Length: 101
Image (tube, rainbow, N blue to C red):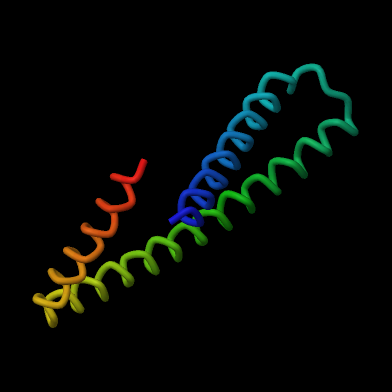
């Protein structure tokens, strides 16, 4: 679960950096010399590439997560009593742990 949160936070942070970079490039366009414009063009190309890469990764991650959820659903439907029993056991254990505090 932590890995999912960490990946999502990383994706959000990268998107923010991309957005801020694009704003900075648009605002500084008129004040640039020729070398700086070349750098800006390369940066724009890399940002586009990064956006595409992140979009592909996010799609793959979402597909894998959906596959996992479907597998859990199938298992619970195939073994409903075991799933309820497991839920009760975890609930009791969680309750015991929380009551200690």
